[in-house]
Image (cartoon, rainbow, N blue to C red):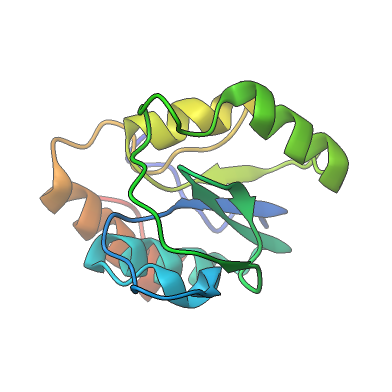
Length: 151
């Protein structure tokens, strides 16, 4: 997906957003665990896209529904004990979500890379950004109106 693609021309079946390093310090629902501004911006943008399904890609647990209850953790993507693409494939197979299309992956390069091991066709509206500031700006455009063009 390029920066100038319109997002109002499709209805995503699935949006996958990243977890975050800032978390609550207690067991809670995945929807409430991640408290950082980047995760929250991704979540708001995902909600605005009105997907059929929204999943969080956790570096520790893999694909999470918002209501999944999890323990806090300190595993970043890419760490030795982080989720692998093989485990993600198993999770997606068990969920019967391998054939969903369109799929949108919101997040940075590591997140998108993992998502694309399962859905190589995933749309990536944050691709080509030059840092967190540009990503946050694109997320704001997604959140504020699908009929707007990404800048």
